[in-house]
Image (cartoon, rainbow, N blue to C red; front, side, top):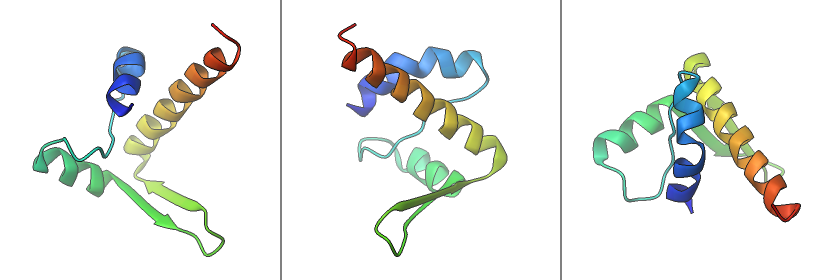
Length: 79
Protein backbone atom coordinates (compact mmCIF):
# COMPACT_ATOMS: atom_id res chain seq x y z
CA UNK A 1 0.00 0.00 0.00
CA UNK A 2 2.85 2.38 0.81
CA UNK A 3 4.55 1.67 -2.51
CA UNK A 4 1.23 2.30 -4.28
CA UNK A 5 0.83 5.64 -2.48
CA UNK A 6 4.39 6.57 -3.43
CA UNK A 7 3.70 5.64 -7.04
CA UNK A 8 0.43 7.61 -7.04
CA UNK A 9 1.74 10.87 -5.56
CA UNK A 10 5.53 10.69 -6.01
CA UNK A 11 5.57 12.73 -9.23
CA UNK A 12 3.35 15.42 -7.69
CA UNK A 13 5.62 15.70 -4.67
CA UNK A 14 8.81 15.72 -6.73
CA UNK A 15 7.41 18.48 -8.96
CA UNK A 16 6.97 20.64 -5.84
CA UNK A 17 10.46 19.87 -4.53
CA UNK A 18 9.33 17.26 -1.97
CA UNK A 19 10.07 13.56 -1.69
CA UNK A 20 8.22 10.54 -0.41
CA UNK A 21 9.17 8.91 2.89
CA UNK A 22 7.65 5.95 4.67
CA UNK A 23 8.43 3.06 6.96
CA UNK A 24 7.63 -0.30 5.39
CA UNK A 25 10.58 -2.35 6.55
CA UNK A 26 11.72 -2.80 2.94
CA UNK A 27 13.76 0.38 2.62
CA UNK A 28 17.52 0.45 3.07
CA UNK A 29 19.15 1.14 6.44
CA UNK A 30 20.33 4.52 5.11
CA UNK A 31 16.79 5.45 4.04
CA UNK A 32 15.31 4.35 7.39
CA UNK A 33 17.91 6.35 9.28
CA UNK A 34 17.24 9.48 7.20
CA UNK A 35 13.48 9.16 7.70
CA UNK A 36 13.88 8.71 11.46
CA UNK A 37 16.10 11.81 11.58
CA UNK A 38 13.59 13.90 9.62
CA UNK A 39 10.35 12.74 11.31
CA UNK A 40 9.65 12.18 14.98
CA UNK A 41 6.47 10.23 15.71
CA UNK A 42 5.17 9.47 19.20
CA UNK A 43 1.92 8.41 20.85
CA UNK A 44 0.07 11.01 22.88
CA UNK A 45 -1.44 10.36 26.30
CA UNK A 46 -4.89 10.29 24.68
CA UNK A 47 -3.88 7.54 22.23
CA UNK A 48 -3.28 9.75 19.19
CA UNK A 49 -0.11 10.33 17.22
CA UNK A 50 2.13 13.36 17.33
CA UNK A 51 4.36 13.92 14.28
CA UNK A 52 7.14 16.51 14.34
CA UNK A 53 9.50 17.35 11.52
CA UNK A 54 11.99 20.00 10.53
CA UNK A 55 10.41 22.66 8.27
CA UNK A 56 11.90 21.15 5.09
CA UNK A 57 10.62 17.66 5.95
CA UNK A 58 7.31 18.95 7.29
CA UNK A 59 6.39 20.20 3.83
CA UNK A 60 7.07 16.76 2.36
CA UNK A 61 4.97 15.13 5.06
CA UNK A 62 2.08 17.56 4.53
CA UNK A 63 2.14 17.06 0.76
CA UNK A 64 2.19 13.28 1.20
CA UNK A 65 -0.85 13.39 3.50
CA UNK A 66 -2.66 15.74 1.11
CA UNK A 67 -2.00 13.42 -1.81
CA UNK A 68 -3.25 10.43 0.14
CA UNK A 69 -6.34 12.36 1.24
CA UNK A 70 -7.08 13.28 -2.37
CA UNK A 71 -6.79 9.63 -3.42
CA UNK A 72 -9.11 8.52 -0.61
CA UNK A 73 -11.71 11.15 -1.54
CA UNK A 74 -11.67 10.00 -5.17
CA UNK A 75 -12.02 6.38 -4.09
CA UNK A 76 -14.94 7.27 -1.81
CA UNK A 77 -16.65 9.03 -4.72
CA UNK A 78 -16.17 6.02 -6.97
CA UNK A 79 -13.66 7.64 -9.33
